[in-house]
Amino acid sequence: MEKIIRAFLTYYNQIDFRKFQNNFAKEIYDSLVNSYSNQYNEVNMVTEMSTTIDGKEFQGLKFHTKKIHGTRSFVEFYNQDRPVTTELADMVIISVATENKEIIYEKIAFVQNKKEDTKENWKIDQDQLFLLHNFPTFRGKKGIFKHNFSEEVAFFNYSNSLGNYGFFQSPGEMILITALTVYKLQLEKKISLADIRKFSSYRSSSFNILTSMEDWFVDELIYSPSRYNPSYGFDQVGFPFLNNRMISLNIIEFIRNWTLFNIGELVSLNGKVIDKELSNLNRILLREAGFSNQMNLNVDENSLENSLVVVVAHLNLDQVMKN
Image (cartoon, rainbow, N blue to C red):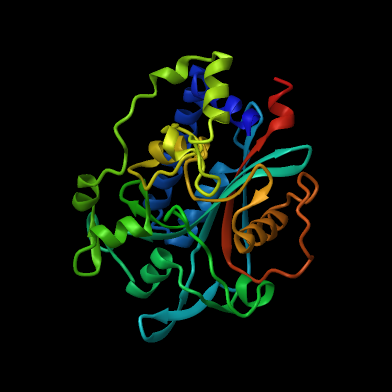
């Protein structure tokens, strides 16, 4: 864990890393503007965006994408007393750190993407929102959970950031927001940009101290037992990285949060698995994304039937330590 923190401290204090983040965001903006000008639907927009993401790299931090073709992933669960079936998500965001091919830190976020139904408004399917907000026990009906998991699946979702929405906005913008936040802000089964702008989940804290790279400071953050909970990460510290952000108001915020591993539910820490089902899912998706030779995934070679875009941020500590 110490090596991961030191890596992100180094990134955080480099102007070249900020330039990398800004250029990364600019290319995605270009992609989204092009998608809107060509009147793409959500599926094609996500595909175009993932192509733009693929191959980006900064000093041991590399970004990969994979569009998995097949059956859309549908799951069955109870919304209150009603059995319902709905799609889980059309995109998965994974953040993973490895050393000697071993996964030592990983996060995952399910994302359902939506274009505006009317200007600056998005309609919300209430059954899917119930799923992404609460993650009740569910059964796979089609796709990955039907063929790779037991009959019933449940996730902890400690951080309330496992389920998310990506709201596309003309002429080329995206808001990433957790399902919990959507549930809080929606009115009459829709959410507006005006409502989102009123909301802020950011705690008021100063990160100026992070410009200090003194060893005693890093050691205090890492080894003080009151500083972090293994299930949640370093939330009590107020780090600008390895944290949870409930909302990214635009593409620039999304890229800055993702490149600092601030998106999604923590799956494992220091090699210790926190959520076994999510860890299994992560490894299946990483296998399908082509990481079998880069990571010790230890998953069965079951076939994957799913229509899904997987985007992966991979921090390779072996490369970082060489720089």
